[in-house]
Length: 324
Length: 300
Image 1 (cartoon, rainbow over the protein chains, first blue to last red):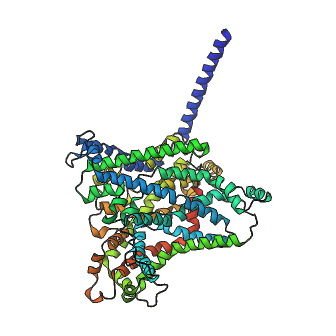
Image 2: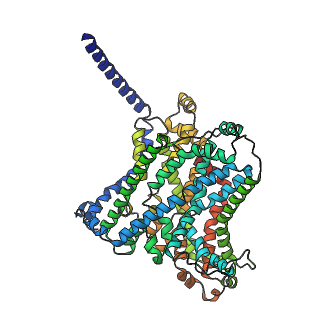
């Protein structure tokens, strides 16, 4: 009996010593880096002011905002803003459109950079590879405004593509004003702008693969396709999983810049997303800041839930690929 | 998410690869994709340099049979666009300096094993996934009295978290021995940052600066939200205005030159000159762009 008590006493003593030692070390570390801490104040102040202070403003979702009373002074109205919002069919239309567009982007846009990276990696001549990479990444550096102009020249009713169709004997297509076709334009233009850039992330992951793996696979008689399937893909799967989780976590965004610059009232029924809806009801129609904030909060929370679920599911499927 | 520094001196991939039929086929497919990327640009340039009579007959042309720079003449005499260039220039210069200052100071501290680093990281990454949203952000900028000032387009866009991570990884890659040696010689933390770490990270600073520069060049959203005076609009917002309301452009064309300069030509000329600065510097700096992305390579 005695020996166990002594043991536990010893253990406690040891733990306490360890804790004290740790604390001493911590104090020493803080002292050691004391001059560095002030340096991060600028950056932290930025995050506090422009990311955390607006979070304080989220309370507007539960208030009837009046300019005179300000954020803090405005009257609490409970869930009234949400009730107003949920009663609007335009809102549900926007939610549905956002989810459809995000889902379509996930299905069609997501695999393209992976395929591009695997294909580019197979190219023997490094000069050709470099040139192609430069071309593929170029659209990434343009704003959606510029791209919308470029697309206008191509796709307007009497634009270049319709002119080509007519030369070939077809009839002109309403690229930008017919719902389903417009969604197709959204998906294709997203691929056009982003695939080349995301491809570089995968290329970086591929560059990290040990060449020995390919060497030994080749010895065993594997051809290029087999190497791509059984070596390249498993090695970049982790990267793909993270990008997938991040894309799912942005599902409620569906790219404001793109849609806002391309859409027009004729395609609102299929292309009006949550962000464009908030923008319109806030700045172009009669402003009700309470309702607009409620839409934002609804969107933010849904995004977080989607992110965490995607992270959970991916983690279940493959433990290593979990992000958080 | 862990950001892993990639070794730059990876062993060169030495497996010999034959050029066979499937390979040629693959290159062809990628070239077609490259063509699809480039063609829209070509089309815009084409539309901006052909005369109206060609464009009205058929805008689809393989190459311009007649060249005419009326659209560009109009663009360069259109004051609004020149104002746009001026605003964007101001935003790019001051904005990038501001971005670099915030990013470098914060990432340098986070690159050291200081106590509390994990909490600060969490504090920062959280903002990637949850934000206050449009209205609270708008009211904040308004409350800070930045409406209608250039500050509204510069100050709220301080740190891009991706760039912060890239810069931190780079600082972590600088050997500790260097700063230890400097410390023995009596250098303080700030001297080490200014005299040793910053000069060593010039390529990375260039990369991050370019990322921020492109972001700033493309800025329009805050301009649209906060700028009441039209003469302070950034270039991209001008171009947006030009694309959205064709009529307003036509009306600004002097009566005399109306038959030759046509709206689409002018719009495309505007777009082309807004792309030119990016398109010109990009191929030369591509290795820096790619380097940044490789260094920040997301790894599971």
